[in-house]
Image (cartoon, one colour):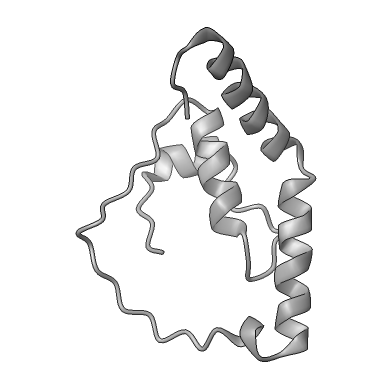
Length: 97
């Protein structure tokens, strides 16, 4: 994933949450951008080459960090706020990210 975020928006949402180490910081950041009222968009034609080794697939330490970040996000108030908005939108018939 490759992200471009205006500095003003990045500052307004408080930047990266330093509790995330290596994994899920992008998911958290995008969720907080949406909660702040901004759109998150995907550009499927963009190509970025990243020579990542995907250590979490082969190294237990990296896998543990990955799992810890997933648990941190899915038990966070950010996740529950996004989920609540999606549920509320489903009842009103509105599509809201």
